[in-house]
Length: 313
Image (cartoon, rainbow, N blue to C red; front, side, top):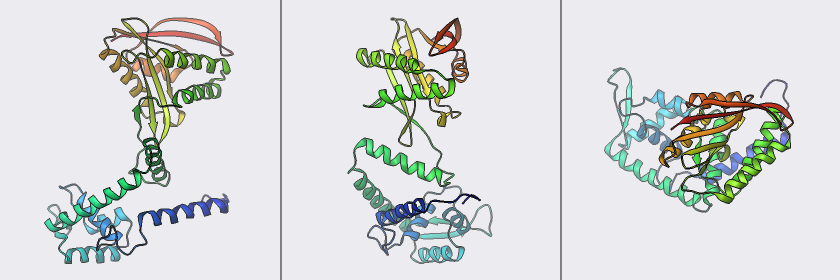
């Protein structure tokens, strides 16, 4: 706990309650796992050995660091699995004093059975949930791991089509972010609502599209492509949440939009922005857009300079 910070007792209690729930859920209190003859620590060791790079089999010390296990305890587990003929210990090719661990032929068979049973058990839990609930759950799990210091869990994002509720979210987040960062008033949110509404009402999937970026079950970005004329696509409402900046999401959204426009036969792409949106302009410049024209205007409670950017496809 950080020095000088008093942690609320109810927060600690809720954290512990979640841990107890998770322990019951995975059956870690059972003597054996997945109705097998193996304990959870034994299965964890088999998993790490089975999934190690073939050219870099782990040593017992490597496993101890990866699993956070006491060296003596881990040694007893490895010995028991070796005695059962599941794990083989041979001198490492790179260091003869180091024993590398690998699964025997029987060990691979046993692990496959355990792995298949685990996958079946997970699928049985997930199938009780809707597709949306599954994504929310997986996202929440990733967020928990990341927040609690799992360095191997880097938050990633996926791009998908919009779902009910997304268009309202996009409108809300635009209004909220631009008010916070640029001081724009509610009339900007009204403009976004108008653009989104028109897209929904006249949407033509043959030449238009919206992408929603999702990370850990939460929407963090969006962009639209709409038809301006037979030859020209218009990029609209590029949005990247503040929590997702600096990770290439804006560039990815623009690249997807350009790829789509090319595939649909558009020859040009244009967009309208304002000079104060420096980060967005850098993305457009990086994607090959050039400034075509600009004009001062008073909108959203501010004096701004509107800009039209474009590029050939």
